[in-house]
Image 1: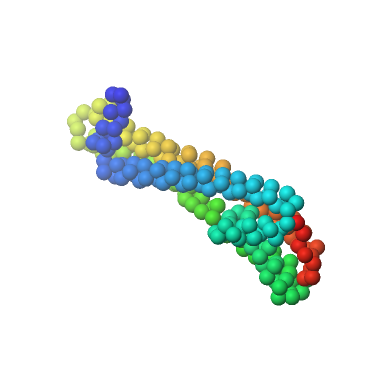
Image 2: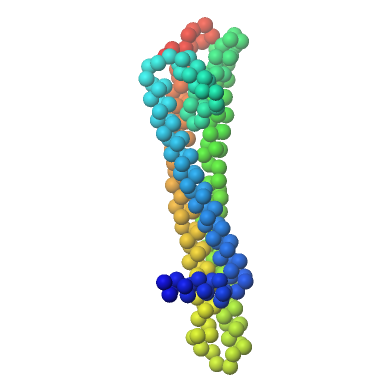
Length: 229
């Protein structure tokens, strides 16, 4: 406890205003990145779970029209793989009703599915750039606080007749605290960014695979044939 108190005293009382500002900025960056980490972890986990559930329903052998209508009756836009299916099947059905040539049916459905996929990937990647930014610049911000604290310590030595460790220690200590806070903010952000980027890439691959499989099913059925279960 005394050591903890001495650290807080260095930060709150002994640190220069510039170093205090650096530390406050790093605390804000750390809190913001952890908020993104917790929210993004929930969003990606939910998307993976929904993809598993939808694939089970899609490949269960049921009628695709019934599956599409069950999604529509929920009254809200789907996400993930469900959104891709809903967009593709809806566009395919609409074009069939307009007697669209067979070669344009699949093209229109694939284009609509691609837009839905891009929208979903954008939703999953939202705020990932913020984690990358925090992870890349926080060490340098902490280093700036370190350099400023050490510079202030040596500057203060010019105002004393005898340089001692007691005179220079507080400034160097606050400088090291700034460095530690920069690493504390950066490391979780970098780890989380790499993890989430990998998970989003895997989901994007699953979406691509589903689009190809679904397109293969739609390709077999022209304007005058019923889409199977």
